[in-house]
Length: 249
Length: 222
Image 1: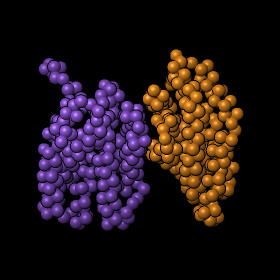
Image 2: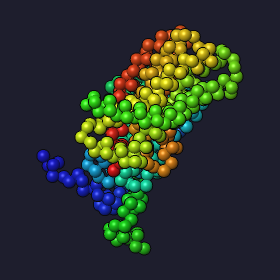
Image 3: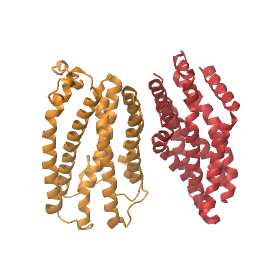
Image 4: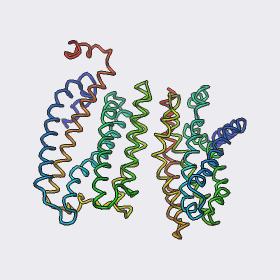
């Protein structure tokens, strides 16, 4: 196998990751702007009006991708937490720290757009249904993680304590995902499933996927740029940072 | 292995008995919080019966969280904790012993006192038993989950504010099923399903939480 010869750890060093991230950010930012632009155009002007929910349903084109991202980002953070604990790489913890604010933002966005959707459809801003509650818990978990990282001055201890907190909290993700199946509550079931395909028109599905991909690209771009800042902050005293073009000026 | 567990439990219980005010303050916090609600909401028995399960469980959550601070703090400050982690005995048992002692001191009195306070809320005999049973099943889970938060924030500045932020979201499932069991009984549905879920949470916490706590202690005591 050729794979064995690839050095997977090459970019786990902040010094090599920093310029790589710098080159990648504009690309992902451009992809994000284009995809979200197309997605918003499709969702407002192309997708047909829903026969049951009227125009108000269009909010799902933001709501569903944001909810997906809120869960994915937590899983990715947990993945980096495991990597950090197992391989003891510094960059892993920086990545989970860089992802956390974006994850909290998407969780809040999902809750907020959900409330906007709920008012016309259910007649209330908020119900204590299983999926809403567990999404709210997810938001608290993000805030707890950010607060813990902020409270610990020693970065090494902060990284590892944060990793453990992430791994404990990861129990919540399957609960959110399956909540509409396990408990028969107000939030409707998933319209898209891997096994049975989708129960909605293909234009709506495509729009939603485009929006989700756009959010992905945005998340990557923002997380990379935040990771670059964290690297600079932590490696302030190292030789390679002092030799950087932008630092010298 | 059992002897070390017993030694830790007896030691922590002795220490707790020497400082009775610490133990009693968490218990009286519970009593006061529970008694405050009828004053704030009004003495209609109909309403009180409805809110009783939620009030008891939220008060239990807060009381058990208040007591968390003392779980490892004293041992951490005088270095005992470090010595404990260095001993050849399995850390899992050490931590489990400390959590068990903590539960005996904070959780059990609270659960035993709850039926008496429940009379203030005009609960019938059966919901009172269910309330006590769910508290007996739920408070050890609270102590186990809370231990993770206590271990993570050991010796940090402002850990008093941080612990609730970390621990309360993880307490929510216990709250839902604990209060749900009593509510289900009051409204005439069976409480069995909720009690099974609560037991499942307890078993899961019993296996997983000490592992996470040990890992967190090792990081904090480094």
